[in-house]
Image 1 (cartoon, rainbow, N blue to C red):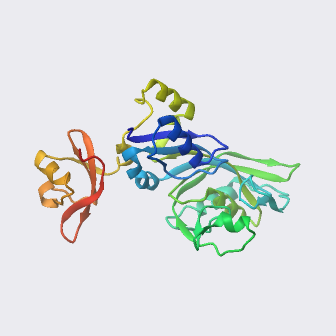
Image 2 (image 1 turned 120 degrees about the vertical axis):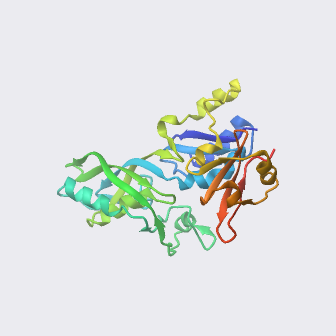
Image 3 (image 1 turned 45 degrees about the vertical axis):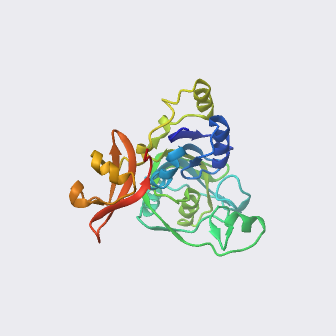
Length: 304
């Protein structure tokens, strides 16, 4: 069985689960998951976790994401992107200038920005997903959530369509997990009292993988036929590179393989988390219990 992470390029028109389902067929294995859902009309980096790699999904998601896309001012939709029905239109008689755009984008850069998720989203309220309420025409209070926005900037000059009286702004945003970029687009428009939508989106980085490292489903299919995944599958360490790594002695490994604790004085460390390796193989992730001054198992990867 394969263990590790594949940085998949998700094409438009597919759900994230479509990708997982196809890969289960290609790789002939069930233990496959993805890190961070992408909407069907969004393409880009979708880290796929295989085997033991499914244990590091949370750490991949916590590493942050970068998106490039566009916001179009002048109309809004039910879904906050181009897939939905238009619910509001307002002619933009005069385009926003760069100072207005840049100032507004920068106002979103916060460690805890409050967002209200789109009604067409998978967020659960009282056991049902919001999109289920939307499809049934039911109103429901959407919960606020806090997201991290590291930066939000223009990538090239905006374009004003004088015939349609709409303006399109091109952006790049670095953000934490759970951020709805569609909602950023809508909320940007609200700052000027103008209806807005996210009109294009590509995820260019996720889980420490840049888009130039991604592979397509066809490339994975070819690798499977040749039984050569050397340039396709990355070690689970890719999700853990931000944690300190400690190579265990034989004596320490005997303790760890049985899920035992390690005294911080014995390994001379005080980091919150440690990746433990033995004979160049990642074995476990341990966390520091400051009340007892010991390290305890957080995740076990390979105890053989």
